Length: 138
Figure 1 (cartoon, rainbow, N blue to C red):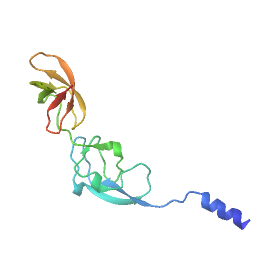
Figure 2 (figure 1 turned 180 degrees about the vertical axis):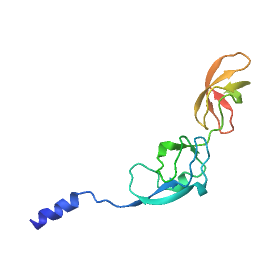
Figure 3 (figure 1 turned 90 degrees about the vertical axis):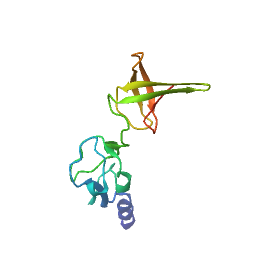
Figure 4 (figure 1 turned 60 degrees about the horizontal axis):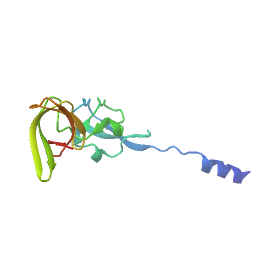
């Protein structure tokens, strides 16, 4: 009987508190998160961010409220291009290289695909945002 109780105790999940990251103030969507905006709180919640260093410098994708856990999908890299920004379109296929001016039809960070309107031809194309803010057309 004692052996059976030990096995049951071993199989039951043990609840333990862990530290999670919560905002100290309301952080609106599109705001960059600073170290002073975060604090650690002892709580047990699955699927939330536990490391404040991974949030610093990220952009809030939704409103984050004080004391509430932050989930990984609530933040992302800061946007380099906003909707209606004027951007440089680049097409590079050696030996041909073309640049043109365009207007962003979406918002995104480096590596994101967005639609852009070529201002000279009024054609809508899709490209990838480069780290320098230019749009690479493939």
